[in-house]
Amino acid sequence: MSLNLVAGHQCFGGSVGFYSHHSATCNGAMRFAVYQPPQATSKPVP
Image (cartoon, rainbow, N blue to C red; front, side, top):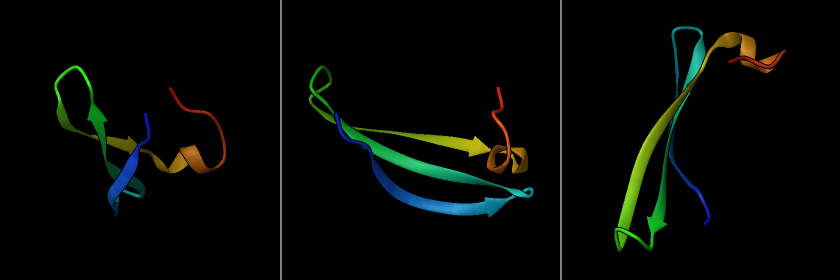
């Protein structure tokens, strides 16, 4: 499985990335978003 970064934006001091990947189970493209707070640039975050 390979992830494709669709878009990335700065928000609330951190960043949000929108990703897509092909799902063999669903036989189509799946999409999801990940928010990373500002602390993610300097240390691990939950």
